[in-house]
Length: 139
Image 1 (cartoon, helix red, strand yellow):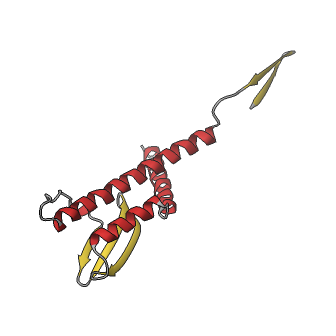
Image 2 (image 1 turned 90 degrees about the vertical axis):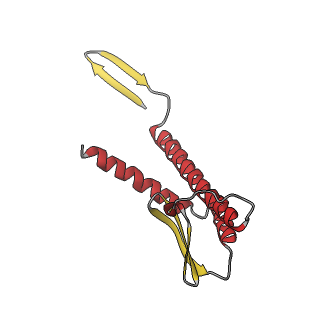
Image 3 (image 1 turned 60 degrees about the vertical axis):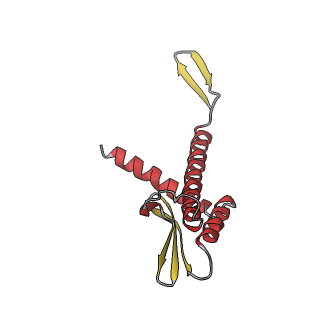
C-alpha cells in the first residue's frame, strides 16, 4: 500500500510492507479449523476407547459422559450424532445389527481424516466467530 501526503510543498510517500490482513485472518481461521478437527478426532477416539472397554472384558471401561457419546442405541437402530460443541456436523441412523459401534466410529474417524466434514466444520467455525463478535459488541 502506498500513501501520499501533500502538506505545503513537501511530498511524503510511505511504503507499507508486511503481513496482509486477509492472509493473517485466513491463517487464524485455518488454525481454528485444525483445532476443531483435532477436538472431534479426540472425541471419536474417546468413544472408541469407551467401546473397546465395553467389548473387551479385560480392558477397564473408560469414563465417558452421555453428552460425549456419539452413538446411541434406540430400539433396533443406532443413532449417530457427531458434534462440534452443540452443533451437529453429521447425523445418521443405521440398523443396529448391521454394524458394530467400533466399525461406525472407525468409519467416522476415516471420514474426518478424508475431509468429508470440512464444510460443516467451516460453517461451525464461521458461526462461532460471528456469535462471539455479536456477543462482544453488545457489551
